[in-house]
Each structure stands twice: as structure tokens, then as C-alpha cells.
Image (cartoon, rainbow, N blue to C red; front, side):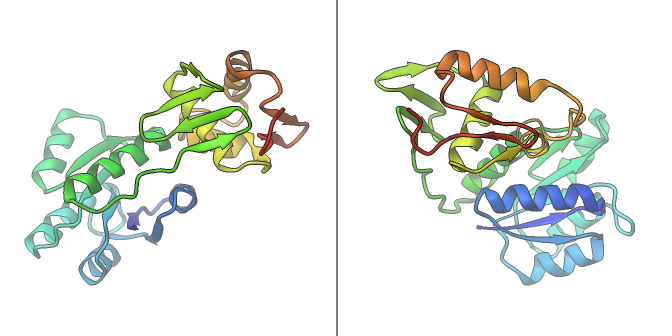
Length: 223
């Protein structure tokens, strides 16, 4: 699946691109409205993430022009504006969804998946993930330890899924924060440690390894 990201803030654009690439998307990034228009009409994207605040044409104008040109790519507008008026304006301009900053990257991914389903794009069902006695189903969002189902909160599930997708790879705190909590927490927050402790209580202390000074990893075959 191919995704267009229109974002002029370089750091955020980089994080979004990295996150979606890790989710298996082909990603193109542009940083202004004119480039977005040119890209969207020339490439058959499956979805577009469109920031409202752009240096030339704003996101509302880009969306309106794309719809007038009969470009029907599903569009999610991304913005710091949180008023009802702005949300209505975005939807009236032709956007399919609207997400306010700060946001969770996991929620953004879920919304993009929903948009592509509405469009009718064929989306391959996620393969169940396994690590030792653990089994995780991304589609139903359920987790089992052996034959027993384990009930996790939304954030616990997203964190565990991230660790299981990269077995034996050390994931830094900043990478985990970016993926699970988006841009809500500073790098000094101890929220990652809190959730790691919670997962260990529910799943077993041997399942997640602390790599001192670096981050955390999940062995491919924990004992």
C-alpha cells in the first residue's frame, strides 16, 4: 500500500515516514501544498495524511482542489486546530477523517486502515505474532499466554505488538514513545517503564529484557 504524507515540519514528517514504513507502507513525503497536488494526481495513493498548516496552500485548499480535480484518494487531515468549526471545514473540503495533534501513532494507523477499508482497498489480514508461549492477534487485538487469554489495555497491547514485531531487536525509549504515545510525552517521561512493568506483571518477568542504557527487547523464544 502506498501512502502520501503532506507535512512541512521536518521532524514530524520523518517520524511519520519511519512509523508507516515499519508498518509495511510505501511512503512519499512532501512539504507543501503545490507538491501535494502534483503528487496526488499523478500517483494512485491508497491514502493521504494532510497537515492543515502548510507554507503555501493550506490543507483545506489542497483538499478542495483535489476533490475538484476528481482525485478520490482517502484523506486524513492532521492539525493542531481543535475547534468544531475547523473540523467541519475540513470535512466539507472533502476530507474523510480529521485527527488533532497531539495524537497517538497507533490511532493514526488505525484510522488509515479504516479509510482504506472504506475505499475497498484489499488489505491483507495481519499474521498472528508469536514469541515463545505468547501469541498475539493484531486483527482481533487479543493476546494469549499458552492457552490462557491475557487482557491488556490499548496501550499495553500496542507496546507488546511493537516488541513482538521486532524480536531480539533493542527498541529505544524514544522509539517506543513515538510509536505508542505519539507526541504526547517528553523523552524524560517514565511512562514506558510503567507500562513495561505492567506487561511483566501480566505476562511474566522473563518476556521483556531491559538493555541498560539502551532500551528493551523481546527475545524471539523467551523461556
